[in-house]
Length: 124
Image (cartoon, rainbow, N blue to C red; front, side):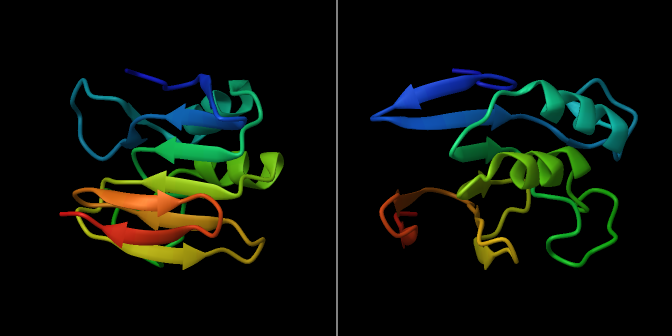
């Protein structure tokens, strides 16, 4: 199920989807410029949780163009009081709490996330 740019509802929780990452190669994949990512983010309705392929821009302190993250994701989190952002792309697990309190969980493989306290249990 592709939820890019849409909202799904599950047990009273609104979940938004944001596919793709920063344009780091000249291919026909879902890669966006920072400006395109901001336009996409502005079109998505408010949600409690954001599922995204990549992370908010600059979250991990890298300037590696493939892993820098998207400004649109940062904007969406800031403008919509998102409680939880779950992303992939980095091929490693991570757990970060942003200054505004948003929990950002990077997932590689599979995890169970408890929405009551955002605790994580690795499955594989």
